[in-house]
Image (cartoon, rainbow, N blue to C red; front, side, top):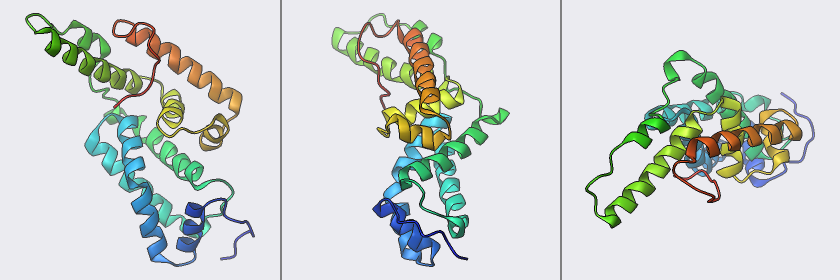
Length: 199
């Protein structure tokens, strides 16, 4: 198969081109580089560790099977996260993967009586972290994707737009709605502290 004469924009894209052209070690290196980010993204997206690891494996399998059609039109990061986002979106939309892993309301109601101040502070910090995870998991899928790509991957708006195959203005709107929802959900835990995705 012939491919368009496009210069790979980064080292990972060059590796993917090598894998496309028959180098198995190139794909093995990409797997080593990107396995942990893919697992982390998928776990955060679906809210389940085991399922997230399975999704990450599926993402790499999908990329490997489609390697013959790869053309490096964008950064490899944008490419792999677009594949990952689309795959995770398809999975979480299925009814059996809609479990959110606990609600923020349930965390608010847990008793904290009888704890020493230091233990109480540690527990409160842990509950904030759990509340952030629950609130992020409860976001609409495209808002969740945009937020994770920005907060965890540090992607600029233009790259998020490429990854989600939308416009920069649409990404801004997704992020704005996601932040408003998270601030509302997490207001009992944090006052005016900067909001980030912890974990």
